[in-house]
Length: 226
Image (cartoon, rainbow, N blue to C red; front, side, top):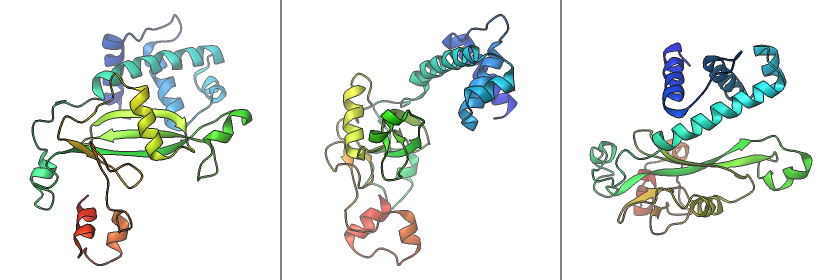
């Protein structure tokens, strides 16, 4: 992270989201502790050695910055225009996609992030990778603007179940598409109202197209653009 971005982020967290200093820990150092732990997957003990504070102070300042960042996320991680009244230029300027995908307002997908848990809690978090992970579901617009993120569900859960659970848990603010609009998702998600999945049993992921011939059938052409 550049110094300029660090300073901008610090000022936003302090002036708009209530990040406060301690007698011997400035808000700058609090943010540095938070980024050190998140950016490098560092432990509390390593953070103690790096910043010369007690484990309790490290933990408390990390939580305080995390609270401020989560509050900031509610303002930043949302659509600029919740009605999506205009077709994004990435769709409008692509003759393969327009007008067929003119009502698409973004994509959703999931990934698995490793977690550290006690042995008693690990079982339901172990999925295909063989290690404990959490599911992270994200929705992203065409300008790389994230409009929603859900974290914390066990890594063993299927993508569709993760989506339905997120809709239920975040019922108040889940960004459902406006009437007539939809998100695209891969074959792990349902093909239904508000969500458009590719044809199953056909080539889909980009590396598969790079290794083979151009699509010829309607289903293959659809999957290629999707």
